[in-house]
Amino acid sequence: MVLDKLSDSLKNTLQKIAKSLFVDEKLINELIKDLQRALLQSDVNVKLVFDLTEKIKQRALNEEASKGLTKKEQLINIVYDELVNFLGKEQHRIDIKQKPFKIMLVGLFGSGKTTTSGKLAKFYAKRGFKVALVGLDVHRPAAMEQIEQVGKGANVQVFSDKKIKDAVEIWDKYKDEMNDFDVLIIDTSGRDALSKDLIIEIEEVNKKINPNENLLVISADIGQSAQKQAEQFHKSCGITGVVVSKMDGTARGGGALTACAVSGAPIKFIGIGEKIDDLEQFNPQGFVGRILGMGDLEALLEKAKEVIKVEDAEDLGKRFLKGDFNLIDLYEQMEAMSKMGPLSSIVEMIPGFGQLKLPKEMLQTQEGKLKKWKVAMNSMTKEELEEPETIDGSRVERISKGSGIPQSEIRELIKQYRQSKKMVKMFKGNKGDMSKFMKKFGGRLSMGG
Ligand code: GDP
Ligand code: MG
Figure 1 (cartoon, rainbow, N blue to C red):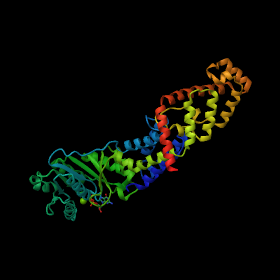
Figure 2 (cartoon, rainbow, N blue to C red):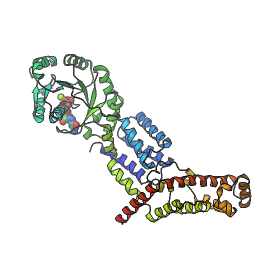
Figure 3 (cartoon, rainbow, N blue to C red):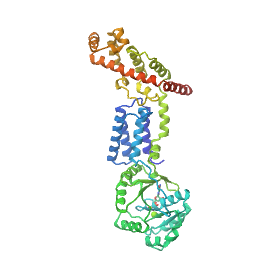
Figure 4 (tube, protein in one colour):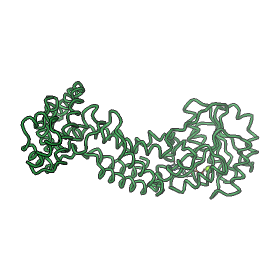
């Protein structure tokens, strides 16, 4: 697979998220470090990496989970989203909207122009267009033989002439004949670097042919220096898009892709092998999805949910649904939850509750705090325990004196109670969802043993 090293490390990173019980700042920081390491290893430019990961971090820390997503899913989604943006966001398809539609390939020696011209010829022929190849590489002695070969492979007609040493002349020679075709793929000559000679030649051919698409072919193995090359060509010859070739043969492809994406010239195709079918239309969404292994990830997220025991979840559900909710219930529930692990992991599984912003204290209830609250509750009257709304300022003061627990902690307990009560109300409103969830949850677990 293309970029398999990058893909492996990104997958590992996301699996860590999927397996963790809890999305917190520590996990986010770890994620950011992992992402940076993975992208830098793929030769992505340092500044780009830091800009990207900073964006991910800010979103991860500040954004509410969108509807229907758990916090974990949300986090994974942010990574996916930003990587897609990073690679140009949208797919830039080529619309064949006139005849003949002229696609010209430019680029340095050995970047893969001739190979790509054959791939493109086959690509469009397969889609029902009448395609011809035009060989305008007049500098390399063997170029014309190569394009004949490539034309055979794609099963399309080739227009070229070994004897003519001027690209424009070759074009003129076949101009009328070529009008019969839907798509013309035009292969040109390259140089070792973008030189004056090359610019002049491209400009001349450009003026003469007036291509609908002027695609720069860049070899992925040059990594992040692809940016400079793309920008130079863009400025000098007005390219309309990039083909990144040889994505199969290098670990630096991430660098090449991201570098091209920021150059302002959209990536339209990638070459993924030497054979004629080894060409893909570049689609950032599909590409990132594949690199991250989104399909596997979904399965993993599902599986992670099974870790929590069904009895505990059912018990908790019943307690919540019971309704009469007082401080004693709150205490009992918190005690039960603290045995089960982080509450967030349970709440996240309940349809519609993933996006609920739960009080942090509630998600991190610690033993120590529970003990203090228990002491404070021992100093409360029965009325106060059953109807915590009656606890006003002077009562807080009294309870604090009686128990030795600071007033602030008692207020926190009451605040927590109110927030929990609000939550219970929402739970009740969501009863349908809740029981469906329980069924689904129980069913899967009993099937899985
Ligand atoms: P040109 O000088 O720009 O026309 O480059 P060529 O088309 O002649 O390609 C140069 C070399 O790169 C050849 O050996 C091709 O087989 C190889 N090549 C081109 N595209 C790809 C690709 O996507 N993957 C791999 N592995 N090799 C490629
Ligand atoms: Mg060539």
